[in-house]
Image (cartoon, rainbow, N blue to C red; front, side, top):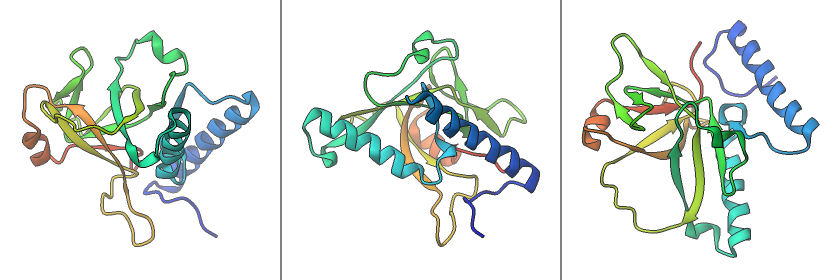
Length: 187
């Protein structure tokens, strides 16, 4: 028997499975997509993100290769996340490891003492026409499926690179801190 990759204990894995089933059951019963997607619920999250890019490419009459992601991190009480985005998708349930997140300034900060991971607010993944990024003030943060960043021989852990505002520190600082987004935790 085979299951989706996970680093959770059996009890945590079972709770995680129930949450996954609930997300997809609710989606199928309402016959419309959820406002925000829990990306970790997908067995193959890169496939879901590629499908979003393909849909946008068809709507914009562009090649899927000419699209890239633009990211906007909402603050916790942003009422716009109650509505479906006009373009792209809202992603929820990610965690930031190796850094903290300033909700008001919407940028990376040092993690609080003894805080290994920080829950991230909803992130808007918006497909845009591929253009040269300035990169100034941004940290290209890798997002991994689970904390084992190297993945397995059959299933890589890397999902997508998310541009986050670097705050007062240069992006090199966050690289040295090994700051990364995690879709799911060990337990």
